Image 1: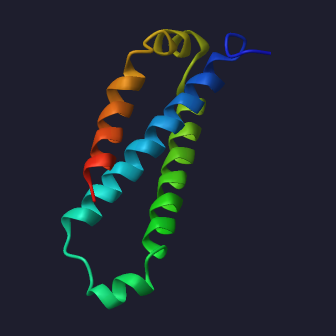
Image 2: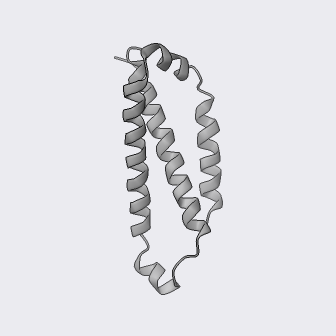
Length: 102
């Protein structure tokens, strides 16, 4: 069974991946824009904000997948899947933003 057999599932998976990447990127940029804690406190909490951002991005991705999978029709899903150029439009700015943030 391929994506061509289940276009709604393919569209939901693609939307979840893009939503998760976009969510994590926005959260990381917001965290970088805010003033951070003192250096000693930063060492003590090095991984905790990362896990929270990953968890929130996963939650956003699951919600988007659920909504897209529920709302989309097979015909609409095939039309949206034909627009493969949307993936680099979302993914490349996320990649550049994450590489630019220290």
